[in-house]
Amino acid sequence: MHFHDAIVRPPDEEYTLGLTSSGEGRPDVAKALLQHAAYCQALRDCGVTLHEMPAEKGCPDGTFVEDTALIAARVTIVARPGAESRRGEVSSVAALLTRLRGNLKVIEAPGTLDAGDVCQVDEHFFIGHTARTNEDGAAQLRAILSRHAYTSSILDLRAQKKFLHLKSGISYLGERRFVGAPELRRVCGIEKGEFLEVADHESYAANCIVVNGRVLIAAGYPAMADMLSARGYRTEPLDMSEFRKMDGGLSCLSLRF
Ligand code: CIR
Image (cartoon, rainbow, N blue to C red; front, top):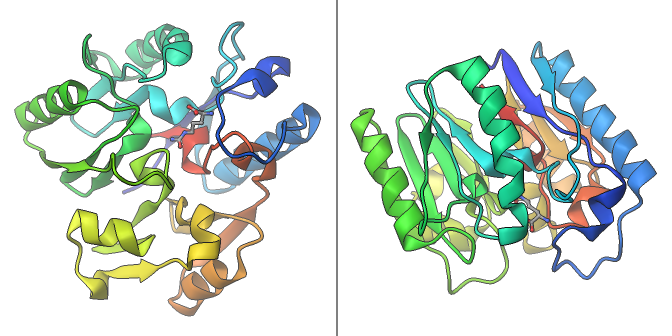
């Protein structure tokens, strides 16, 4: 899949007020802005045109723009975040997506869906049922996808507490290959041969993105970097420390299409 565009939104001074369970302390906003700028540059270096949204008042988690929508080739879906404090992020993203993508589908109450819970695998979608994405939201998404000739499966992840979202612990690399935490391989029912297992102490690095021939990964996870390099992937490490503090992974910072 080739990406031409990505939507991003920088953090602002309210960023420290966002949701987190990491216990890693408050993020340094100036540092987060630098890391965000480096992330944006890495996307540009992959040939992607960026659509930069301004930070929005009252949306401290707004930089995690991936959670607000799901963009597939044949349909664009506006999510309804499970955390009430994040619902205000959606309308501005929807307005931009209407301009960029045309007709949108929408997840409606009582459904909730954080798009970070959705992992696209070619024409199939894994949908995590989590603390953020409820049964109704997952079912709505499944119905929309099916109307656009995509298949999907809903995975009950509520028992595991380690990952906020499905994609916090698993990424699809393309060509039937995944990278992620072994426990999620089992839940997704993926064959071992297709799955590169991330060591437990590096599980944060499982969230990575493949963009036009490069894999953007979090810096500071050498086993993950070596595992991908050994298989011929070109990796681009990015410092994510200030996003990790707020439970955010690398994929969450952009909506790619
Ligand atoms: C939240 O708790 O919603 C944000 N602080 C982090 C969201 C990260 N998004 C993601 O993993 N897809």
